[in-house]
Length: 277
Image (cartoon, rainbow, N blue to C red; front, side, top):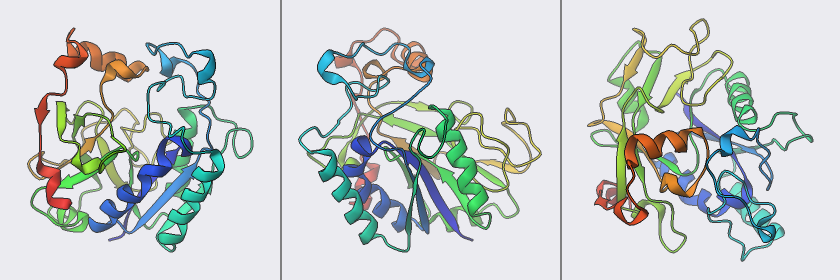
């Protein structure tokens, strides 16, 4: 059973974090990583930036959705590119990078650019099971050492659905897995992530990948396993929803923050990731 991970990245936002993310998931049994290189600029359709603060003049080039993310401005674009090349050399044979820059390689704005990259990966490698996660998302297993062991618990299933726990944002002064503060959990019915094998339906939302022949809105069927959260989940180091825009962030603010200030959020501590350090 071959299992891989695919992701689309804006290099300036993600390259300095990639080494730890790749190494972590290889240690869990994932065998291939396919990264779609979206360049250094985000081009989105606007609605995914709802609620974000407006950019200042000197912030040109930042993603409107994430104006306060870590952009590693101490590095030039060339230095970021050299980091990326070193990571590709380090993980040669396991990591594949596919150019995916707007206009140059496709004509899709975000999030459609992400959705089409997922379909492209499934089509290129139909013999793999795939998870589509971002570099700020980390799987964690509580009883199994590898993804293959976890999936073997459920023979004959065609899809595995994982809940998420939302942590504080990544901090460049320490390992991502050393970020211990978290705020809220999300169940299987709200923005989970899935592992499944193609062919899949045309992606309409990255959290709800479905096998060919099933409606993209289908969330429950006999071939799907809602993996119990005591067995596994994914940790999402996205940080406070107040720091970003987008439809999902707006829902988070209303559903989970409930009017709390930033100082009142992300005060819980979860040390379960420490076993991987």
